[in-house]
Image 1 (spheres, rainbow, N blue to C red):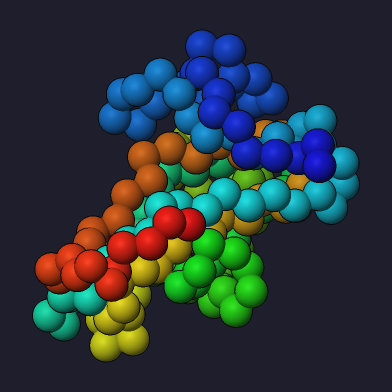
Image 2 (cartoon, rainbow, N blue to C red):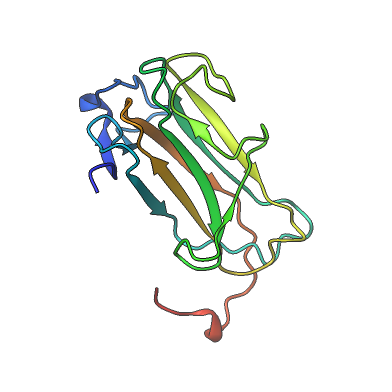
Length: 171
């Protein structure tokens, strides 16, 4: 797979150069769409998160994505999934708070964004539906021969309950 996620220092990031990091830092996560092969996909999976004690508060998952105005006809994009296992089997595709389940790199594609800027995207999870101790977020990049996709500041709020001996396992 030539379209893959890699840790990229901002100082050497190209195609496009995303500029300063949102909130500081020296590295971003880059999905290589620029030199990747058309239709390559790659996934990155988070550590597990515990929402079992959310008390009716919706868990959220969010990140910044750099949206550029190059290669308008090339639909490089990402999709975000959630699963109780660290794989795609049975994973659920999520929609963000803008109602989109696909985030294109090209800034004029829906949901549109200001060209060549970092944009915050948030995914609200219904508290009543997400009550388990182990949820993984899966970000899938899809290469369409355009510019690279940059992500930064991936965060979630968690609501852990007490850890039991039966909760411990090695993935």
